[in-house]
Image (cartoon, rainbow, N blue to C red; front, top):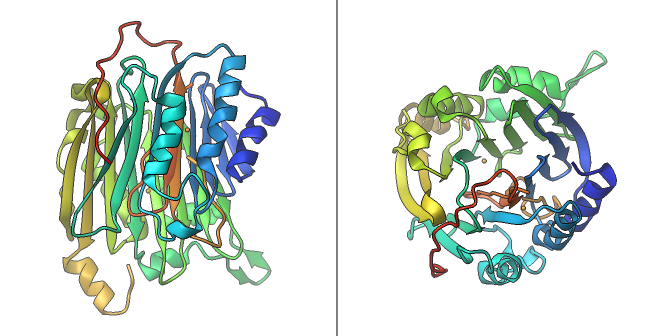
Length: 374
């Protein structure tokens, strides 16, 4: 495992800091000033938001992996569409530059660098960007990411600090009052509240993690939810999504399910999602190298949710950026050294980078896939 000094050397390059932490026997988790970090023995996942310099941390991550004799197995990077692209530091000015940067480090893996931009052509501001490269077939793993905007005003108010009779509301109260603690009750939660508003949490259970980040301000409210490392058979896909939506009541949201390894292991997670009071405006399935699959769906409120909004009740190797730009949107980066990296982001400034190491992976080379057009 990495020392705190080594971890800080990575985060300094990404321009974020640790504000809280929680560990179990499987991995260490950190709530960051700009999202979350998860460190496994052979995998590292960083999720950030805003104008952080996520990709610039890659050389240091690979340097640390080499010091630990961890050969590179796979790398994944993903994000949504930047709200303020001109505010992004290089190499995050555009996806072509990001892909060129990533290929310098991961393009030599057996699959080559594979880049995709998916989404509804009628909504250019809602594109999903993903880069993936792998040396060997991955063990089966499923990741769910939700990005929610236009949060219900009453539900969002929970994430503002309140001061009454000498009492200041805290993160633990936000976790309970919002219903976040009921999403997957068996998970142990590490939560953190920001001043004067905002909320982040990481939750752990065995090798699985979930994470939530909330920007509650009316007019640009946003929440993200992610869960990874669980057994898909142990969670009902539709029920989990509904429990998340119950906490935030968004007017719009997207769901991205990424399946690596054998798709049959994902059970019902590779199916179309139906959600009461929401209409699916777009669904895309994208094949990934070595048998992987990405299913992306976006939804808009209808029925009761829409009616409540009309009545004045307003109803996610990754790194995070400075909050003066794109506040509340996230990025995800993962690098896996057989050292694991994976990512997803939709409708928001989310970048995800994941790096996997080769230890514990099969020796059979994966099938290569030609580089897709951007």
